[in-house]
Length: 318
Image (cartoon, rainbow, N blue to C red):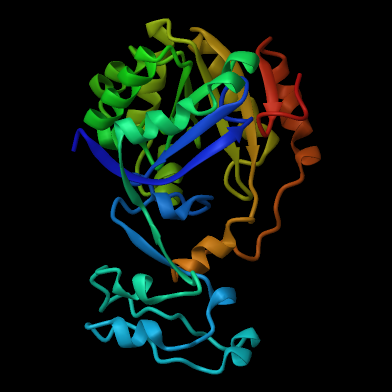
């Protein structure tokens, strides 16, 4: 689809996804299934429904509206505070996403995740903050999900952004054919490239795909002369050892290319509500968020490369 695509969020005044003040456009749909994913609503390319328990009065309007018997009957709201009660409003195996339950809910407890937006609508919203971009060196960041999964739309959106003289960042996991990535960087000022793990088998175990294509694209990106940042999510019991980061540092040293910055992104569990809203279990729900201080030892490893390195995109840097 070249004219519209599902958007989960347009995040204004973002500070960590490229230089300056930015507007992040999140496309829905990603080929990776990262177990720690902080934006689970961006994985499925189709519209989904959030059920926000704290807003639900158990009034039964959604039950009456549903023609597919996909709504669980109301219960006393007080019992939902009991940790031993496992209750989710929607029977997902019966739901056909007709959204009649969402329309019927007057308390905003049911909400659609994924809104179809045209390129014109997105650009209009992005341009509303043009003075902030000019004063800070910011602009638009295209993210997801994965922009290369919507290649025609992403190309057209970036073209339109450049027509409006916007600074553009492309946030990608690199899992695509090189032709797709190359077609996007023609209209991109900085590529934000995720590097999750060097070991292909571990990468497959935790993301659902091997990393051969990703590593190959990163090498081609470095050889292209394109300015890019490498973003490394630091995940407990996956890539949080000093030896691992020494290996990554050695790999980056061999890349050469126009690497402007390295961002170490500490794991956090602030997204756990999103998993519950989607009716999904999350294996990291009991894992504590990483404190940025604990990544300083990794920061030292990368600082020896002579490349600006941050923790979290801001804050600690060297």
